[in-house]
Every structure is written in structure tokens, then in C-alpha cells.
Length: 203
Image 1 (cartoon, rainbow, N blue to C red):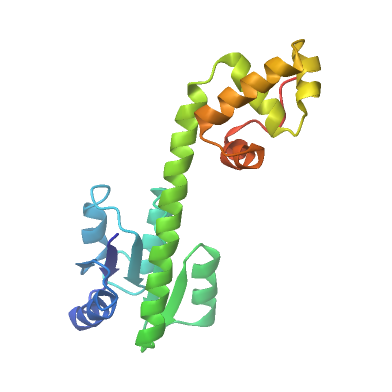
Image 2: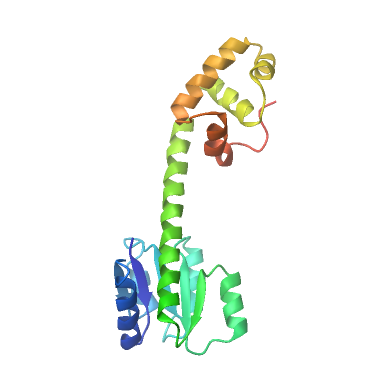
């Protein structure tokens, strides 16, 4: 998972590169936000580090552009002329961290490492959501109904009454659903599917 470093000052860029590579994290360097954006979406960094004040597109403008493109990689902004209001606004707009030059190298490297770890978690969670969504599509209409009732906290007996089938049949459907979703138990099933189901179970 590569970290994209963006700064028009080649000396600063080199310094940041050495810091991040010392943590065994791959780095790609860019001297402008525009050069970085040209490589999207082919290049999907796990973290973006950008200077605020650069010729052309600024770091804050890049932040807005990344949000517009739905790039979820954590963004760390750096400025040699930062003020409190700028930092607060950047963080409110979703920046992962904000540093003022000269910054503490150790704290900076730690922040980048934390951002990369966050990106890894997000990537894993997104992969799981995509996988679960595909599994949901493969369920039959009746299996889907049973799943939604189970996720709503209903017992087998309650589901059986709703669907005019026996509790034993509900148990069979539930076992099929859990196997196809890859859930270990009901709690795991609800955790996996809750974000992908309607807020209310079927009537």
C-alpha cells in the first residue's frame, strides 16, 4: 500500500520519502497535485501527504478534489504557514492529520503509519462488504425474507408465524442463510449483513 507524497520543494519531498521508507512503506513522490491526479485512478495510494501551499492546485484544493472523486485514502496536510483556523478547517473537512513545518519527524512517520493501517482496515472492510453483497444476491426470495427477520431480532417461532411455515422450516432456511453468508452464529450474521439490509424488516 503506497503513500503518495506531494510537495513542490524537492528537498522536503526527499526528507519525507526517507522517513516513510524507513518504516518499510512504499512511497511515490509528486511535485504537484496535478501530477498526482494525472495518475488516478490507476494509482490508488493508501495515504496521501500534501503540502498546503503549492503552485497551481493547493493542498486544500486537492482535499476537495479527492472528496469529489470519492478517494477514501487518509489525507495528511503539511504547511509552512499554517494557522489554527486552516488546520481546524482541514480536519473538519476530513483530513487525517495536519502538520506545521518544521515538524517532528517521528510524529510525522507515526501519523503516516497510522493512516496506512486505517486504509488497510478500510480496504478489508470494503472487500468484506462487496463479498457479502454478492452472497446476498444469491439468496432466494424466501431465504432473503428469513434473513431480514432474523436480523430484526425475531425468533424462529415469530418468523414461522409471519411466513405461515413451521419453526423447523425456518431453522432450515436460517441454516442455509448462515452457510451461504459464511456466518458462525446469529450475532456474526447480523454484523455481516446489517449495513446491507433495509432498516425495517418486511411486513
